[in-house]
Image 1: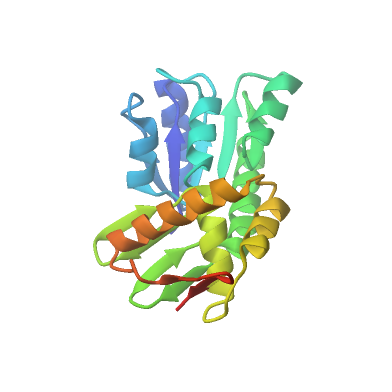
Image 2: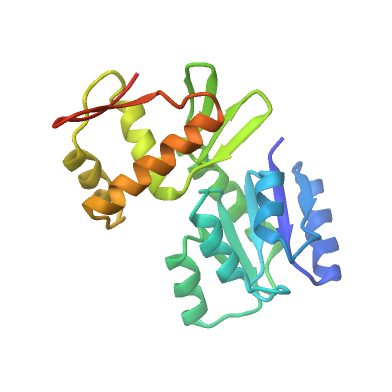
Length: 220
């Protein structure tokens, strides 16, 4: 059963969405701690988020920006803001869809179904040694330990996973980042590799990425 998180502070809308989603066969979570919204989202780890722009403490677009630094959980903006500017901003920040209130329940469910279907095509779960890598969620899990990678760290790690036991040059990694619209220089790559290694160490994989002097890196 797919789990959907509702991030909305209007209780009547929350109740309406919750009833609609449960009737459609989804598991539903409701965000209650808006002050620590990002941390709560990452604890819940939903399959999809319905996110309003006007929420307490920080608006939904800011939350979306922060989320996209660490995770690719699908997000549909469900908001009363109908301006093209808000829609363009939301999509540029990484929203998967944008639905304005009042919404047609049937159309909303179809949009949810479409976004989940698209995400399933990219939601690869890869085993690496005794850990599980959730590509779409940007997460590595080993036992009860979970670490979350930034978007750049995940791009680098995914590239190394796809070229396991093969030396990968720094130029190859920067080209892959460039192809993913992530602009990064040589120094930034070094920092990202260092942070990635530190996170891998948290799940007992500190020696997984080996530096080959003058050649690049190898994941083994």
